[in-house]
Image 1: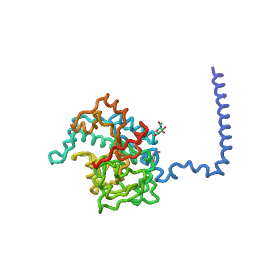
Image 2: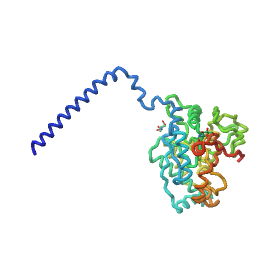
Image 3: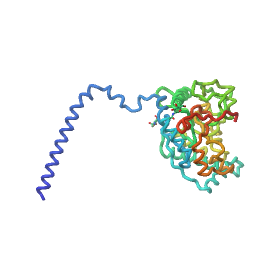
Image 4: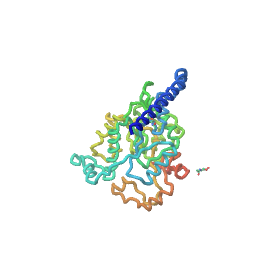
Length: 360
Ligand SMILES: *[C@@H]1O[C@H](CO)[C@@H](O)[C@H](O)[C@H]1NC(C)=O
Ligand SMILES: *[C@@H]1O[C@H](CO)[C@@H](O)[C@H](O)[C@H]1NC(C)=O
């Protein structure tokens, strides 16, 4: 027994010595390369050499994460994932709590005695979901996040678009050369996905830039179409201060601004999350930058299958489509307004699917 142990120990020792010799040999062989050829190692230095505009074109569009607001797997998330895969984006669908009706009711009645405008139940549910996601951003310690709703859509050229947004947001906010962040730090909300924002004379100087992938004005659908027609040249977008922006299809926040939005919008007492965000953007509380026209828009399933959004159902405007109806319309192509080359429709149907133009 004793001799067996001895034998094992000495065998281990031999292995150890052999291994050490091999390691020493490896170090000796590779040391000359290390000493003489520094330049070969430089590309390994991470991030330092990635320009802001190239960061803005990475898999999370220059944000630390893209987070999707979702109530669970459905045609919305399946289309979202297909579009993300096609355009090489990483979108995280975060787990969302199901707030009980009592909690939603309570939230929807804050400010009732003071005569505040109150959200209807569907809008209150969606509002609380945005708050939950913002809490997730804060507690996860993310430096920045881009929040999308799970029926969102974008152009297959999204990364070319965000490179231009990076250049122009940085110029608009006077980001210094030392600031290596993709969009600078001069904003709280970077509102890239909406359904319209006003363009007015006398607003703080907007920044005009060329973008050939932009939706033609004649093809645009939305209440702010008139402003595009009257105040914005074709093939151009604006980086501008938010003015009456509506719909939160996609917006960026930072670590500190996520907390600010939570504090400001945490108590409800308005028609809906987007309306309240827009109101707080009007004051000095939040610095909100909009890209106009939008680069994110929502996808709508084909008409005629009884589709209604969760918010509309919750607001009492009808009942949701059955699972069977959902399966049916999932096979048929819907439309996305204001996006020339929809990533969803390209991924799922190999087609474009522009919503017919309209003034609303
Ligand atoms: C994209 O760039 C941002 C900003 O530099 C960074 O925080 C994020 O981790 C990058 N995303 C990926 C997938 O590397
Ligand atoms: C997509 O459509 C184009 C024509 O519009 C066709 O040439 C191409 O083969 C199609 N691709 C796939 C994967 O079906």
